[in-house]
Length: 86
Image (cartoon, rainbow, N blue to C red; front, side):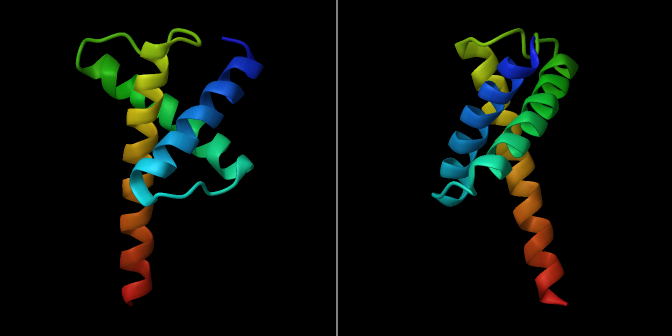
């Protein structure tokens, strides 16, 4: 996939993941970064379970990226909550 495709997929996945986890977007750049990281995490996890990862800009790849973004966001929020407790 081209860099532009990763950015577009990351933006969409990051925005959807932010909406699922905390009902708000985090801003354009943060949504893109978390979406791209989520796509990598989702692709890795899907590969571990025998499914194909991100294969281009399509609905399946978007689903993989959103699942990964949600996982990344849940872990991020859990760590930030725990860090604030000390």
